[in-house]
Image 1: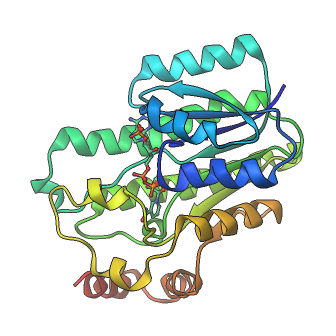
Image 2: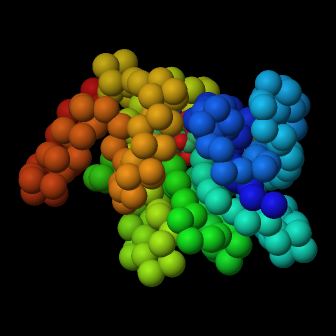
Length: 254
Ligand SMILES: NC(=O)c1ccc[n+]([C@@H]2O[C@H](COP(=O)([O-])OP(=O)(O)OC[C@H]3O[C@@H](n4cnc5c(N)ncnc54)[C@H](OP(=O)(O)O)[C@@H]3O)[C@@H](O)[C@H]2O)c1
């Protein structure tokens, strides 16, 4: 059986991946949707042409991740695509945000993504595709978003190296790096800190992010940067010295 796996499928960018893949990706028999909220995934599943299998799992929990790994080893599906969207951010000074929640950010954004990727690769055929949700926050350290930006730098670095390792197997790994996207992400991110000013000026829709990301993956791109402002931002991060870049980001946050 040919499948696509989407984590974070109950909301925002992950849910939009499910919808666009259902419309456009003809290579699959089933979409496997992973997130905690079963009812949200069931609502989406009802609207799809492709049959969906729902995995209500908490990816912060090692046992839940292993359970998913066991299903893969027993059923041995062909995984045509893995989209790792489950993730969250918290805005605020590192020393003032609760430690446990920041540790959870590392656990979900880095460890769970790494573990899902590791468990899936053995089931991928030639031309398999992996899309990892990083962020434009990956390009440069960000004060008041310190742990989140660091987790996304990890995703970007990991994905680029993995792409080189998997080149001989013709598996494409794309790190997706949007700026602010209009999803529920900020409801959680703003629990303790003010919204980033950046968001008001540069927000894009999940529809456009997913369309760009799928196009980039189809064209075998390693990094998908969504929208002209974020492409310009990435260009500047490559040109300016690190200290100047940190000052600029601080200024942009005000
Ligand atoms: N929105 C932005 O501005 C933006 C920008 C750049 C990158 N990103 C990245 O894009 C990805 C998707 O974010 P989004 O904007 O779509 O936010 P979102 O609407 O809040 O979606 C987050 C998804 O992650 C899932 N999730 C959270 N905790 C989980 C857990 N413990 N176990 C399993 N699933 C969990 C949520 O499902 P449940 O709550 O049902 O578990 C939900 O489906 C994230 O990695 C985020 O960092 C977002």
